[in-house]
Length: 206
Image 1: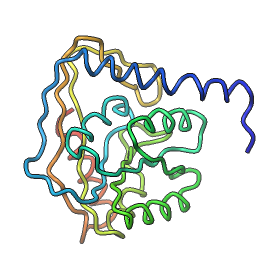
Image 2: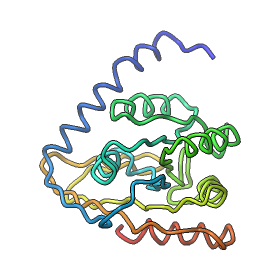
Image 3: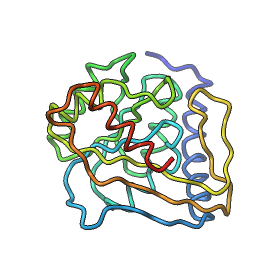
């Protein structure tokens, strides 16, 4: 698929600016981390709501340092912007979603897990409904026997965009409390039970 000249320009400009902006916000804010102790460095599924994409890479880096991670990102143009932005953190992108390219994304996820990658997923992405859980995260967790860690954070002062996910941007010099759940398993659960458990863990610190 060919990309228009305008989009090529945007793809060359926006991701590095977004990366620097993320670092500016992160460094300007006061941080507190509430994470599991004595984490075993092995592949996990990392789940967080779509509204929390901006600061979640820093929480992953805090817990796992330089461990490999691949992020499932939609095939839309905004997904390409996100993919290029997070590549500066050393994260790899798996392109696809529940609405488009889902089977391809699942197969690629399985390959990455076999290469010792963790997988990051926004269960309600790429188009919502907000705070819903699509089937993909359950399929990957149960097929590959991976445990899930739920990421979330609370910010003392922030902007909330008027978008479907109500995307959150911390205000500079605010305080951020980062939360990561203990790893939990979806084995021996029905699809609906698994989805409900994921929601419960993601909502715990909202």
